[in-house]
Image 1: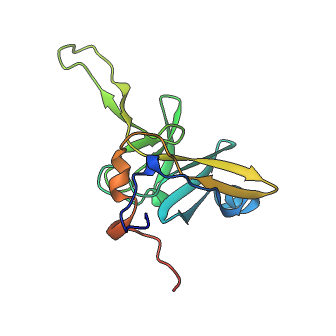
Image 2: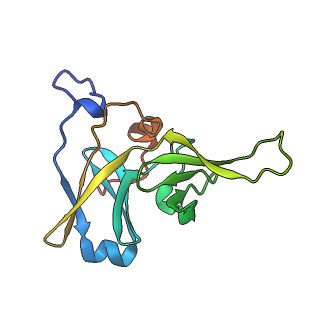
Length: 157
């Protein structure tokens, strides 16, 4: 929030990296949740790589931290447990299967809806995992569910 009480768009803010846990713990659990500068994120360790994204699905706010990771067309995706939307871990793209209805011999193929889920940068330093929020200059569908009434991580206070 700015000094006047208004909230800046994600791409207009400068964010510092926030330590969200240890590398050892994330590798063991394969996922963790955190609040980073008032934005809820889920962090994954999958296939030897780290990924972070908004915790709520861009479609209806489903809890991505409860979803399963599956491979679609060679891309690791989190599958939203509510409506089975597939979101790539690496880019935040929404995937869907398409088929040409005019061609009875056509086989379904995986297509992209474009980037729908905001992804964030994960770094590891001296055994600690850090998340830096995205400041990509575009409005992302998952931004709607990222803060406010849709929060799923309850504070301990």
